[in-house]
Length: 238
Image 1: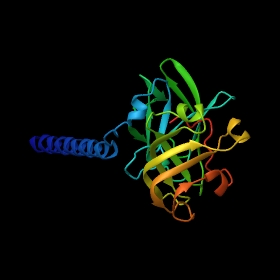
Image 2: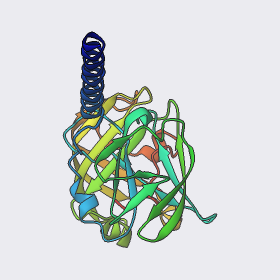
Image 3: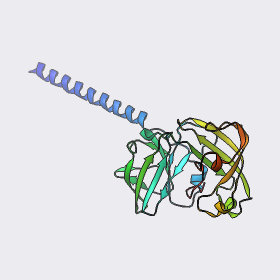
Image 4: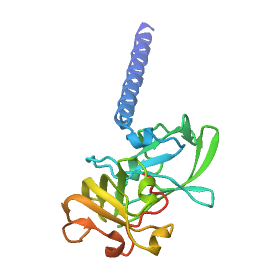
């Protein structure tokens, strides 16, 4: 009888040891998968509107201006239009809400999530409001990110001759960084086209660079060289 009790205690002790080991493994797994929040870019923390951004290029660079802001369309849907370089299997999300979640998942600004891996439709519940979110990703399309010294395009749009310096990040069609550095200035161009919603711009870099197969140069007139592929549209309120 004593022998059976001893064996029973041994079995219980073994089971407890296994449970403790499993708990340690789960904790270690959680530690590995829960990355430290990324530093939130200043142009996001300084934003006064409620909005959501996603990191478009996981490669660390100089300018760190590659967060894509959602675009509210007339159909009531907020579109997240991401380039090929975005890693949806673990994409960093930023926002300016006090509390945000998708389903039962809290969305903490600066954290990476895999729930967007398949793209598509989501419902974001934030600060008492519900937002219809659609995540889309392009393939083999280059993307340009620009930030000005003022943080807006207001001065540029006030007069096409106005110039403003800033930073420029260009991601090539294969997802590699083509340019990441200072921009000498951006200004408007055109005549009647300048009065349209889709405006053309001149860009001058601080140094010569080869951009997306174009010849090495400091100056760019993207609207002429790439059939409007670089036209800044309404979402460009960087």
